[in-house]
Structure formats: C-alpha cells, structure tokens
Image (tube, rainbow, N blue to C red):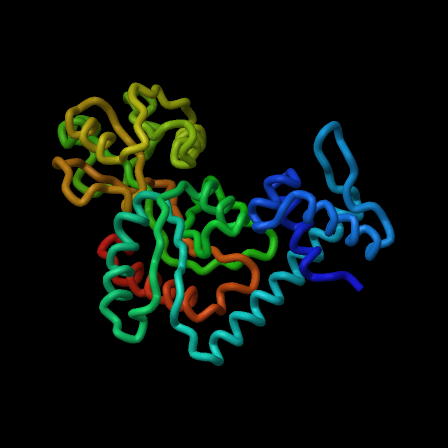
Length: 309
C-alpha cells in the first residue's frame, strides 16, 4: 500500500527538483528523502525516479504518482479543513500573496476588518507583494496560503490543475491621456476611446516582466499597431505622473490608479479590456475556516470598493 508521507515527498521532489531542496522544504535530511524514495519504489513495484547526470528526474510512473498525490493530498487538506470547521477553528496564520494594486487597495480594509473583530483576534495575516506568476508559484510551493491574482480578457490566467478560484471583482482597463491631448484628439471627458487613433502616440508602459505590458502589446496589436514605447516603469504612479506631464499615453487598470494623482483624462475603450481579480487556493484548503474568513472579507472589500463598476 502506498504511504501518504512518501507521496508528499515525491510531490515535493517534483516541485523543488532536487533531493537537497526537497529535504530542506520538508525539514528532513537528504539521506532520509533518498531512503523514502527507495521505499516508495518498492511499494510501487516500478522505478519512480532515475538519475540524469547528478540529478534525479521522475519516470513516467513517478509523474503518474505525482498527479495522484495532488488529488490525495488535496482531499486530505479538505478533510483537515472540515475538521477545523467542526472545531470552530478561527485561529492561526493566513499567508497572503497579492499583486501591488490589490495589496494597496483591497488588503488594508480587509486587515482592518480582521483586527477589529474580537472573534478573530487570534487570526494573523502575513502579506507578501508578488506578481500573479510569483504568487501562484509560492502557492504551489506551499509558501503562501492564498494568492490574489488577475487575468485579462486579452491575456487569460492559467491556473494549476485542481486549484480553486473565487471571483473578487472586474477591473476595467482605461486609457489615460493629458487633458489637452484628449481634447486635441476630440475625446470628451469619459468618452470611449478607439485605440486605432492612438498609433501615433508616445506610449508609457510597465516593464516587460509585468503581465500588464503583454496586455498592452496585445490590445494595441488588436487595434492594428505596435506601441511606440518611450518610458517603462512598474510603478503606476510614475506612469500617471508622466501622462500628466504630457510625456505620452498609458493603459492601466482602474484599480491601479494612485489615490492622489494629477488631473488626467480617463477613457474606457471602445473594445473593452477587463482585468478580473481572483483569490486562489491549493486543492482542498479553501474550506479552512481561517482562509474562508479572509476570502469572505476580501469579497466584501471588493464589493464595496469605489472602483468596482
């Protein structure tokens, strides 16, 4: 019979890639990990790893076991969550990873609501600001419990198999121009903008590693042009300040607008682009009372946020 503890070891080996990293993640020694893998092979009756140079790689049987381990361990996590609910468990630590604009706008009210509730006084939040790709990887590596991520209509988000998503809000993408530039292009306040008329503009974008950069490339491409990029910054307050200075135009999600910014002319798009924001958890953990409570508070914050359409 296969042992769940050894399934966890091979699952971690698939995540971390080496015996040493797997041992460190599981607080074991490398020889102990190697020994347990050898026992797992005897239980399975076929090799589950093989040497590739100085490292190990999974065999076809090992990959099959990892796929089943995800299901089994997810079910165990769900059972633990249900038991915690029966015990009335509202205590502990919930580690949250969120991209910058969600960390700035959604997490502070959630944190305040949590700390102001005597029933959850023993529930502690730990927050890490991370881009969605990083936070999903941290979730996979069990370095965080709940990831706040996003996907665009022109750039959908891929989620790991079995991971659970909960919708928080839809965040429209807006075109930001200097008011004089907007007037010169015949755009009235709040009037939808056709991007095909912005092919001659100077563009201000996030850095290429941000998914918003790829969103802009795809959105402009659909409008028939490649943007002429004059400045890049992953700080949206920098981009909006440059727009206000007349340096160019920018596309940005409404939630990313700094709370205090110089006057801008903001316009929805005639071909709307939306950023959808989700919470994401590993299989079986969304029913954990503490994670469920934090998710509910995030949903309440998103529902009352002034930027929600």
